[in-house]
Image (cartoon, rainbow, N blue to C red):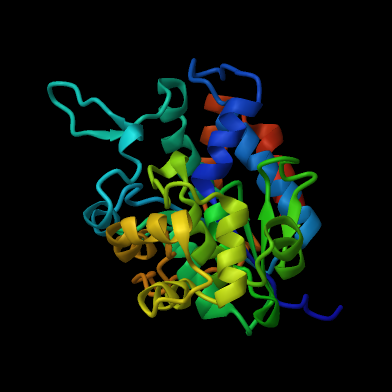
Length: 313
């Protein structure tokens, strides 16, 4: 039988396990700990692997959900998601307690199966995804699984990078985001154009204000007309008569924001990703750990689905 054609599947892990937590009814395992996020994530992985048949599979991780370099550029970045610390705690991301207790189980489950889990200190999972997609683009097709529009900037038809977008239809009926999708949905021609449009538009869910009075359609039109955000700003500086009135005033008033925002919006492509094996597992890495997790948390059927999808005996 010929070897499978190389294909990489990059998972935006937190996006998926948050979706599982809120989308799968709560189940309390034998240990007394809820397991809906764990079960949901494992079932998602099984479905994705079964459909996509990846040869490389990576669970990308937020080692830092709010990196210093982004906060330094725009202090409001994700500020509304910061949880108030207790007397013996540091401030962190707001995570429901019933989800927080499941994250260590997810870490152990991935380790037991042998699925690479990759994070880089000082960077978000988005940056790990951006780095790996850049490293492997052109060498094999890369599918990025996420419910986060920020990663649309990595779409690149020429290098076979697309986004499997789960926000609407989940992993069973996702939007497959390529350049044609970006053109139809947002009126921009490429991933890089999407990033420039996103700077102008802003994103309240990430604490990015955007340019006041410039929504998505106007932002897309500006980027399509001038080609890049840099070119839009050059047109403002040069006194382009096509940019006038309130629109010019709004763009000029946003100078400081436009200086800083691209550093926040742009996904890093040079994070120091560790040199580890990224191939999809061909055997269970730690059968004893998997057996313990299955018994303690009632995860046997979810593990079985992943193992079957991976083709492991």
